[in-house]
Structure formats: structure tokens, C-alpha cells
Image (cartoon, rainbow, N blue to C red):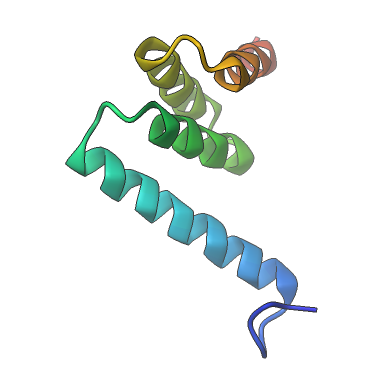
Length: 83
């Protein structure tokens, strides 16, 4: 069942990704040094198949906060997919 009446669940997911992308970009416009926002944007790019963009966002997130284990894992996964 869709959390938004009248819309199929897959449409809600697409709208949610679009909204999240806008929110991450807005947060980064205000402060480009938020590792979590770079990570989130990277996950959206990866989901969309934009692997080069995802890689760039994951690299930036990792540079800003090297302790983020999830980012390092995603960075390795995208690098492997690009090869």
C-alpha cells in the first residue's frame, strides 16, 4: 500500500529519491563540508546508475570524515563496478 493515497508505491519511491536529491544538494549548497550529505547524494547517484558521480560524492564524504565505514564500503563497491 502506498503511503500517499492515489499513488502507486513505486511512484512514491521515485518522488522520495527526487526529494532527497534536492535536500542533499540544498544542504551542500549551504555547507559543502557535510560528509553525510555527500554520502547520501552518492547513494542516490549510485541507485540511478551514475557511478562516476557516486564515486566523486563518496570520495568527498570519505575525505571529510574518514571514520565513516559505510562510505568506505560504498566507495569500494562503486570502484569495483566501474572497473
